Image (tube, rainbow over the protein chains, first blue to last red):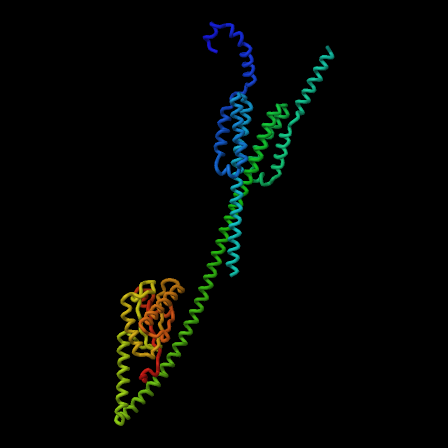
Length: 131
Length: 329
């Protein structure tokens, strides 16, 4: 709709009035602004978590985060800003969970290797002192 | 009218009841249950107290939303957020606890290695003490051997006088037997020959017998292979052995005191062996040669100076004393 339409065809304006009103109502309902900042944060978090180590040690957690971000994008495209914001918040935490899960798996593995090395050294020392 | 108001009132009361007790807060229940169990987990409270507090704050938001009758969708969302914050606290705690284990194990390994080194050093010191003890014993043995040699020398002196007596008898018999005189001449010639051969090799008479010293210049520092010039001296020695088929010798390796006692023994042994092998290659029967490594024992000069150390790096060839050498045909 442009300003040029109004003088030429006033009848069409009247016909579109209910549409305009309902759009206004919808806009009022969606009083939540577009969650662009939260979307950017979620995108960055998922991006950061998408490493080879995370996909190796926490593949299902990373999968959850990326699909949540996809849903947030869909909700944003459908102008469901509140849902988009919530999904983006969840995607951000899901990405953190994936990262931390991979990190704790690595730490536990390193701890086990460290303990194994210490006990191997202890055995070697015992053998040496016996001989 | 009154009935209509009543109807409205009861309807709104029902709505309020529905609002204050909404169905589908199971997500919130699960989240608070998980938060409580994390609160009781000492690993989480020790290693991730901040993360646990954030999970508590998040759960509080969800509970507030539920109390204020917010929509189920929002309560679900906030409960999910609280739930994930509990997971974050648990993963963080697990990571940090494992890292502490790694650090502890590394420290334990370092301590074990240190203990091992200390034990090794102790053992080395004990071995050194034992080696010093055995050195003392060897010195005592050598002193004994030297006094034995002194006795041998006296015995030899006795035999020499006997020999002189025999010589005198021979001189007496000379006029009677011309062939006997000829034999004596040959013996004397042999004796002179032997002396001149050994003197060419700078041999010297010691209580232990005739000793020929091959100096350090025969060898490169720390090496047991012979330098080119050494062959000449050894060729003279080999010739001496050939001319005197009953002579036996002990080849003795000595070093200075640079380096460890053990490595000096080894070097001395290898050098003595090199000399023996060279002599054998030059035709000396191996059963007439023996080697012995003395290492840094029995220095002939002061080890504090370079010249002294060079004199101490040597191979000595000691000829066994044969009482019957002059009577050999």
